[in-house]
Each structure stands twice: as C-alpha cells, then as structure tokens.
Image: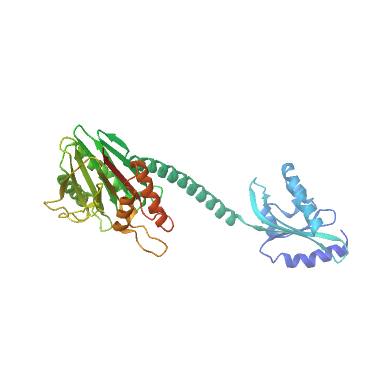
Length: 382
C-alpha cells in the first residue's frame, strides 16, 4: 500500500469513523483496506482479522454465490443495495441493510465502499408481524370453517317441502348473507300438520344462534302437543327470561291443519299477515293479534289466534318480511298489498310454479340484492 493510498484512506477514514453505521473500503483487488469500529463491532472481530482480507473471506462457501452476485451488480451499475446476514465470530448472523458503490480514489484507483446498517429491530418487527399474520390467517380459516358449519346448520332449520295426505307444501329459504335469522318448521303428525315461520331480528351469527335456540323450544312445544296460543306464550316467556336484549326480538306465524276437522288454526305475533287464497274470492289476510316476541312478558294476549275453515283448492301463504320489505329503484316498498297482488295473480299456477313466480316477481321488483332473509311456505288443500 503506497503513501498516497494511506493518506487518502486516513482522510476518508476519519470521517467514516463518525458514522453510526458499519463501513468497509475495498481496494481494486477486492481486499479490505479500511474498516471502521462500527463494522468491527458488528462482525465481533478485531481489525487485524479483517484488514487485508478479501471481502469474500468473511462469508462461508455457501454464501459466496450471493456475495459475488452483489459484487457483479455493483461493478455493472456502480452501486448496489441489498439485505444480508453478516456472519459474526460467535456463529451468529446479524441482519444488515447493505449499500455498496464504486468510487475513484485520489490516486486514480477504484475502491468499493460498503456500508452496513443493523436492521435487527426491523427484522424482529417483521417476524412478529409475520407470526401475527399467520395467527390471523389461521383464525380466519377457523372462522370460515365454523361459518360453513353454521351455514349447514342454519339450512337445516329451513322449512321442508312435503306431501301430507291431501296437503302439499312448497318452501323456500334464502338468507341475506351466508347465515340468517329465519327458521321454519313443517311437522306432520297423525291428524295434524304444524307449520311455523319465524323471523329473528338482525342478521348473521348472533341472529342464527338465537334462531336455533328458539327453533329447539318450538320443537319441544309442538312435540308435547301444546296449543298454538300456549306455544306463543311459552316462546315469549322463554326469550324474555333467557335471551332478553333491547336489540333482539322475533316475529312468528304458525298454522295447524287438522285432517279430520277440515280447518286451520292460526297464530301470529308481529308477523306479516298470512294469506289465504280461495278460488273466486278475494285473498283473506290472517293478521297477527300479538306483538313481537322477546321484549315484553305480556306480548301474547288471551285471544292470541283464530280458526278458519278450509276447502279443496285453498292455498295458504306464510312468509317473512324479507319479501314485503323489498324496495324498487325509486325506494318504493312492495309491502303486503304488492305481495298480495303477486300471490293472487300466480294462484292459478301449479304450486311449485306459483312459488317460483312469487319469488321471481319480487326479485324483479327489488332493486339490488336482498337486504333481509327470505322465507316462504305455500300450502295447498287438494
């Protein structure tokens, strides 16, 4: 090393010692001609073990390929930036951000200046973020799995199509999202057929869980043979005592058909009116006589329902407000009157086609996607 080079390195080195980053200078033979104290601290080595060495001597044979790529990039473009792990004397590997560039010295020779910044803290944060993201992804996968299971469970609460003696039942259920708060029951017995449609306020998981709980209580009441009025009072009392919340309520409509008596019993609580279609007559609306359930103990009065005779050809339509509370592009609501007109116009069709026609007509009226769960049950006496 000649005097001119020593003088230049001394001059440059005095400045580089003041920097809060590691710096080495390599000569035109790629040997380390200068190393500042910060770089030595990073390497955990004394200066005599570094000065005069080839830059590639600091790395293991497995890492030489990458180091040579960085050197080639610096030689081609005059500079290079990359992240690397600096080997330390204790076997550790320090993550560093490296900047390398070629500069001419006062003696006309080309030198390489390599700066290294300790990025251990950034890498630690990145690893923590990576672990957090992995946990979030796993949690998301678990949630998606649970939602799929909840969706299957919720679909099991949908009313079912069936034929019971002279009665045919067609049903449809579609939640506004993957799971919803509606449920329906179609339960045939020896002499009676029970049909229940319930609409729990809200949407999503909480509504679905509440609907599932009320569904179970409804099943118990029907299986024990409770009359419909008693069933309403029990469900309301159960909800007020066990599920009470100012944000939660539910509406319900239920009919019970007796084969031997040729009549239909009906109860409704805050639910849209059940529609009875009889050929040659205007539709009959069976209105709720009780208010919404789950808020007040006295929601169900002593006279909670009624009874009407049935004739061959009569059709009964039970539904949730996901149909009637549909809005067109002018924000006009279809309402009970609008649905009643659609039902009347479709009543001459076979029952399956009538169901499809009602759903298609409501969908054509609606602007955009359905904002509420939709349940629809049609019964026909033949």
